[in-house]
Length: 353
Ligand SMILES: [Zn+2]
Figure (cartoon, rainbow, N blue to C red):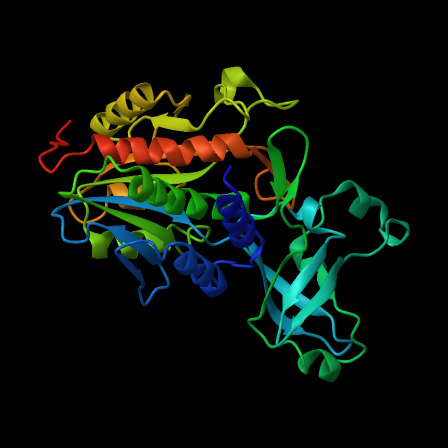
């Protein structure tokens, strides 16, 4: 991957952006997309960069920039912070993690639970519950904590972007800052390598609040009102121990981005993605979903009177943990595939299935 692109990828992954608190990620996104004809953030926080804004035929590219996290709802007399989860968490993974508490300054915190020696017999057998956990920032009193932390402040895992063997990397928040990276990168490829019909406008949107119900995709799709769109999100890799291919289908890290087939994808868009991949020799894997998916593509498809949607993914292991793992080459190929689709669209493309 090109050095400037990799730096942007790292920056947007590392910046904290739990749902509803995406402002810092939006700032990084706007800066990287300064090459576009237009860049804007709407009142919901969705941030988009556009090529050919005058065009009547519009394509929306969506990659959500929010991530899962924690929100502080109570501070006790000892200065312990009690939290609710933002997005889907496995409580077994939360225990013992170091977090950044984003108070009036960035504070180190640890997620505490009773030590194993102090757990009752039946507690040892059970999974911890979030209500029995707290964040300890080292404060001794409520007053001391309140000087730096306010109710409604958020926290995120401390784990940041690290490269592992091969072309693979681990981080918290690849889900789905990776998607915001991909839509921006696809737009840059269209700008620099060309091939986009001047009668086709492309709107690369870093959406907000996906993890809590696809909320930003809904508002931005309404505003942009495009004929077609591609959503990109992380997808479950089915290549590690204990996951059944016969139950979930095959999806391997490093074998190319995934292209979804099923009711949540327009057959016209699916075929155009395949044509684009063949033309530009981009590897991909087909992923099947029988109904609406948990991606922005779900909200987009049923926006207004309907949008012809395609859903791209990147195989990722350990979703919603502090150590999500993916292949950087898959991410790069996913951006290429998005750009390839956009080049297939013409001002008179008919999306009727
Ligand atoms: Zn997610």
